[in-house]
Length: 148
Image 1 (tube, one colour):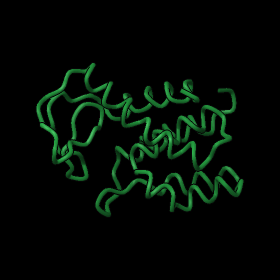
Image 2: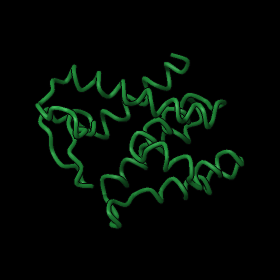
Image 3: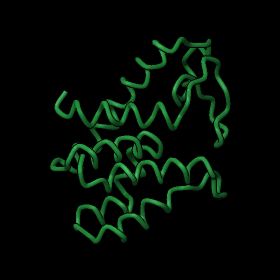
Image 4: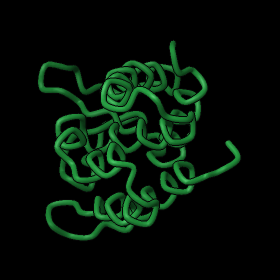
């Protein structure tokens, strides 16, 4: 993988932020989820998964979101890339590609402006979600780290 260090850091962020559930459950947005935040698709069996299976699912899914980030922003340090992998895993590639956040990063806007956009993504069904606030803070901490 081209950005193995960023990918590994994103996996660590996601495992910590998502937590693990072997059994399918409805996430805060009402979507059926299992493992480390993997959505259960309509055509999938919604049986429980082991941690090993969940990690494999996470790695497969994250690869898709990593490609989205890599295509949009090919020249980023690993810490910024990892934080964005985690972010896009949560919000989706389509939303990310049309976001003001992406536009600000591409424009090289000031860190405080990028952070303000980053921290806007904390709503589930129109309501502020404490879990997403924590997630965004953790992602931002990695994104803004100077010594990674």
